[in-house]
Image 1 (cartoon, rainbow, N blue to C red):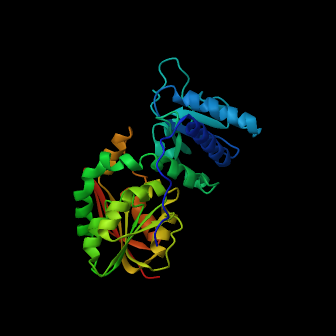
Image 2 (image 1 turned 120 degrees about the vertical axis):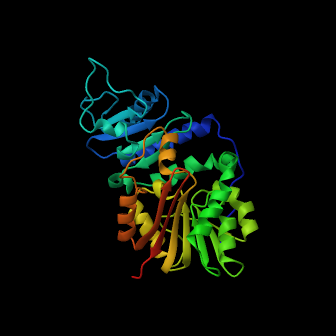
Image 3 (image 1 turned 30 degrees about the horizontal axis):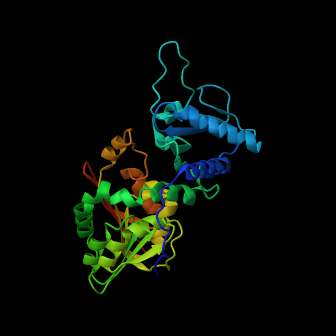
Length: 332
């Protein structure tokens, strides 16, 4: 199965930016029920107020009655924080209870990437809200589509790390290997080498632009490109002998449900390889925050979510230079 040809590349202009804001604000209105929510903005100083103002205008235009503020402690439904905001100084009002969520993005209800004010993107939604509306499809594609053509220029030297991870996982020749969230296809050549000429390699991604960027690697590896959502893969039960997922789990709104879907398409005894060419601590530092022990890929949470979704974790290595974990599909 192959994906249809994506549209030709066109650089986004002002009209695209306006449409992106409209799409994102529409997604937020679908996500924000009544009750207090903490919405954290990841971007330069001043962007939290910019974002809060536009969200408040959208709320007013649709008559939802939600109250939006950036002032800690003020009575409101939606409190918008800036991740880089300093702690209150002497004489300033104290943060409200639970406001440490602005220091820890994984605990905010919604995290918005606003480094580029013309292209805002919802980056994470807390599990209790994540099932509301189609935000995951639109926001994931918005984030990756504009990065597809420059992705390898930034991260293309990670190829040897992918090769080492696949080799260490111990895939068997002749099997079916599926790269879920394949991006530009850096794992495809080592996956082909692992399963050999008698095996099969499939590359699945949600973003057409990423699949287009993956075409050269897929052609070299004899891999099929599949346009699909990791949460509902277009594959039969027990179709795969191994699933490779690089940087995928942290992008899923419900990691346990995501692991369960990966288990559905994997035969008993098959392997799940979770990988990132940067360790969790270094990756967190790159994004301006510290690593947390309750993130989906932390040892305890991953072991529990794997067990709850049909996997048995057999290897876990969260080194400074990479993240690497292997799980075996249990019978059942």
